[in-house]
Length: 115
Image (cartoon, rainbow, N blue to C red; front, side, top):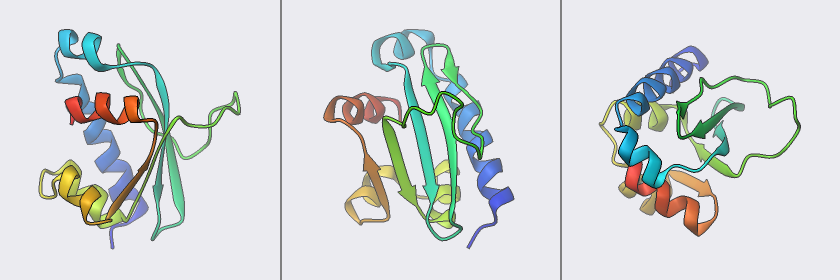
């Protein structure tokens, strides 16, 4: 099991990796969405926002506007760290039930293009 600090570092790394996606690809596939990443074994949820300009840093407090996240991920801490480090494939994790994503079909298809 990873710690909350290791999960926070993994999410910071994900933000950096997202910045490496070309502006052209972001323009084609990114729509502004609020994100929630629940780390089931730690009982903590991180909140972020994706938009054409990038991926905002994740925080442990919900957005002040009180609106729910359109994209919700649930996974264990070690799976988050492994995915961000490229050791665990998102598709396999989804099929194996290690990651759960609650989002519209359109959002899933857009995210697939970016991951």
